[in-house]
Image (tube, rainbow, N blue to C red; front, side, top):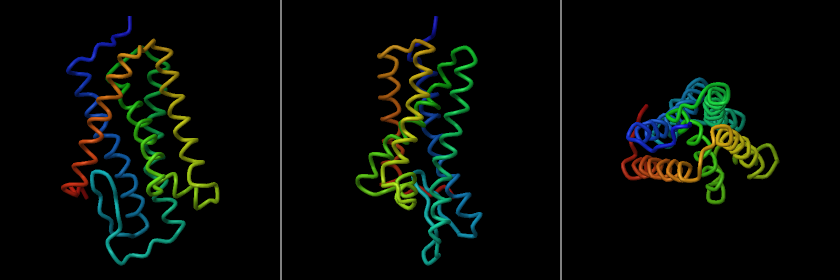
Length: 182
């Protein structure tokens, strides 16, 4: 029997998954930008070079790709663990958060192209091609995991609501207080 109870440990695991996913995603952007020699600021929900630094188009592509690539790697590792092993509900939010994060980033492309949207537009594929492909790939990992472990709609709804709430807190904290990490 798969443990599908939303316990305090699951709520904590979900909050940790959200913070970790956002932090590692932004850290990948920061590290890539720094590796190109740009002094860069990392916040909870974004990175940016210090004013006056020129970033080439190709550097921008690599910097933009770094975050989604590490998010995909995180999701893929968790997917493989959950696919090959027995159920561990405290790992599932690390997969689901990656999907949710990239899904929301895809929708944000309607307002301002980011990460996959910028790359897709730069490559002449339209703003939404790469974001849709990434989101579908992540959705399939979530779906396959849900099917394998017979996750019901209540568990999925609880997970979705928690990820939405914790993500919103993180994003709004960054917007209101501009918390600089690096």
